[in-house]
Image 1 (cartoon, rainbow, N blue to C red):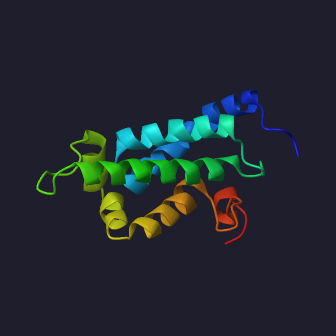
Image 2 (cartoon, rainbow, N blue to C red):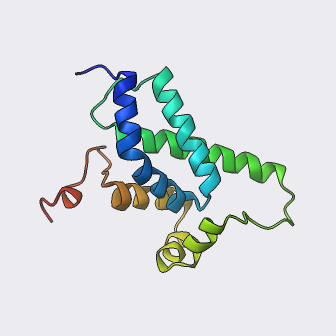
Amino acid sequence: MPEITPDRWGDLYDRAFPQVYRALVAATFDRDRALDGLHDAFEEGLRHPPADARNLEGWLYRVALRKTRRRIFRARREVPIDEGSSKDEAAAVVQRLEVGRLLALLTERQRAIVVAHYYLGLTQEGSPSRSASGAGP
């Protein structure tokens, strides 16, 4: 298995960043924290690359989602309950869309799974789904 070099991370950044970022925003409804979480995930990958390089996009999404959720959780603990949710314009647009409305009906975990599958083409096994590659039902 090839080593995960900084150059390979650079290629992954160029290739996967937009798609993983959109998936994080759809899963969390928070554009700023999704961006921070994704950058943190790339940084973690440079410092401590995953042992298995077969699905770096899936690893990146999982780590970025965890880091984004932690940021959201911390922010909720620090903000008084009577204060409204994020005033982020992109989050408001996503929430107004039909897809955003339907995603909002799901639990946080269900939403993350749906986004990983349909936005990123990932399956539980971590490999791209057959439907995303055009093969199979």
